[in-house]
Image 1 (cartoon, rainbow, N blue to C red):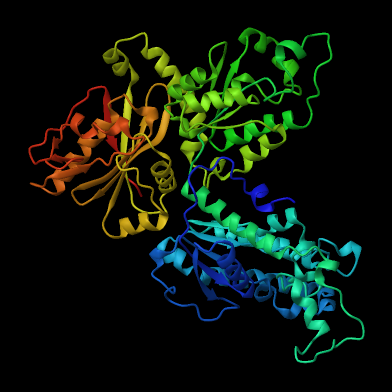
Image 2: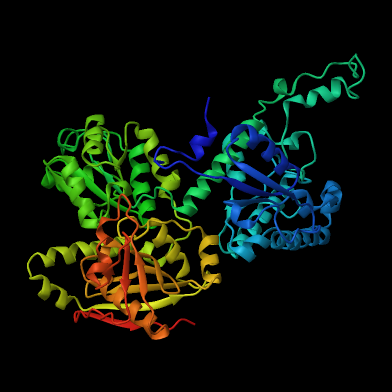
Length: 613
């Protein structure tokens, strides 16, 4: 039996468990079904419910303090949006009525979403909004009216487009695509529109037949002349499986937004991984080549989808590089993929773990950020042993594409400018490291022409805010506290007087974009996060000195306090404060910049300030 939840929302790349404590559900009776099922399926997750039909009064405050909720799940009832006017289908034959109905439904949807997302607007609470399940059969007067304004199926599809457009206008709100779950499962297994009216949009239950055979629940004998067969004789009722998939989707979206176990690079073997067979034995000119359709083409395409998301791709293969380059077009045919598409290519006879380690070093990444795809179980085991934290897949070629493209760890909530340019920036970083080998450190740094731009990030409406959240929650190595911030926490930090200082970097090789974030609470540097792609250029020290100087300007005589909370991964930043001239306090992990602090000077770095609108 197919596990629809794991098929749609695979967990093969998940390492850290999803930790949801409490969810606020806002919606109709369908949402009540979800809550009852959640208590059975996920008893460790608490929930509260706000019944929301039509445009009734919406509570000014949730049942509990908003900070106790990991997220809120909003389900707008289709019946409230379309209203019961659609039951009288002949009215849709009137073009004017059909147009008015759609216009009114769109307006009602906007108004209901505006109310239901009150806490999101006020507090930045992570919000998932369920879309509508499209009816199974076309509800139109004739074949020629399918997919026109006279067809309820068309109307619901258009409302889903409208819903997605409205949700995009909110910060930290995303669509929970239950229509996609329904399409994969088959709506025959749970949707009640074979029995109830089209705009009801709810679930079938196996016990419904009992209402017919004993309609009043008091008579000992059946109430009908003929017994009605059980629902499961007529339909493969799987309402519970549908709800399980809905919960899996909630976990999935939460992991994406929270960037749990995010993948930054996927490293591919070649033989029997990017193509069938071995390039040395099976792609000989003049001889038949293995079949290339099916999974190889799917994996080639997945490489480009990963790149579009800002996830880098690389190659680690035991092979003859000259032979691979010579026969590449034989194995990759049609030519959907080139070796130039990979940010790092290691093709040689060294151990694959050694090659992967070199790739990770070039990209300034740890094994925890990488996935290795290889068909050989011995190689996968050896690489995991040598590089703890590395994730590996590849045993089944029919699973590779789905795991790479659908796993939450390879998704991004919002594509930032820096994410879209990550590949080109990493290529520049590799070029920079190559040139550094031929020069003294002083000469190399002096020739970089490094420019740092400081800017304040003051709220989630600012363009740089999404990148700030991404950087904080994806950075492990240069992260002085290791803390992950939910959007509501970060907006609350700003509301209480906290400051976010960010900085951008560029040099003669590349414009690296926004690569650093410092969170400041009065005279305390709460957290310092920086992308490792600019580590080793003295940038982190220069910026820290500038921050301290500015704090001393606004708070003369104050002592600035910096903190290091040691994590498993943050070794590169543990000496940050001492390198920047801070004094160690008597408390471990606490460093002080007193009023007589001297700002470190590095002539190879130019600092300027960007004024935000």
